[in-house]
Image 1 (cartoon, helix red, strand yellow):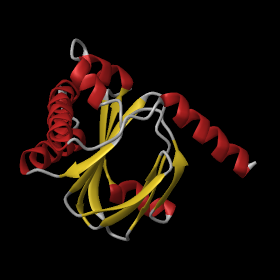
Image 2: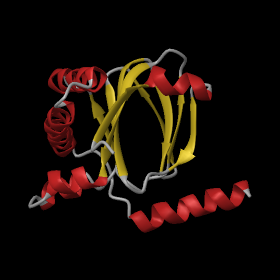
Image 3: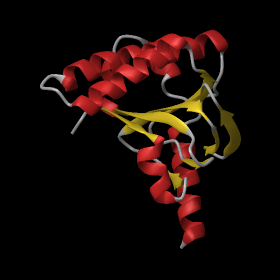
Image 4: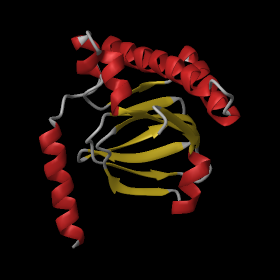
Length: 173
């Protein structure tokens, strides 16, 4: 499997009526990049709206859901847990930042990298995976740097997130 995957909202959200139900990922972290439009989201019980030129980072185990305004443009980048571990190896500061959900503004350098990553993923050349991993590590670093500079996001323990998911599952049964 790929260490990193990039996909536009328009590739998946319309299939689900522009709504993604509550779920979590045990082996993935995700970065949502809203280039244009509006998204209502709920992350570990906290609901809020994100609009154009915003990002949302969701670490593994976070319960999250979305309702996209029709035709919202943007990308979701999924990072395998092993890639997150490799990116944070030897950096407790980076690991701490990437262990909690946070939001922020989409900077021009980050947007450029995301679009390059999207292009690499779509072209699927012979070395796209190596190039994608390199770009994805830079995306993670810039994202974490932005989070640290703005001091956004609150640490939430994985155990609490799993308990919340169990509660949601029981409500559906």
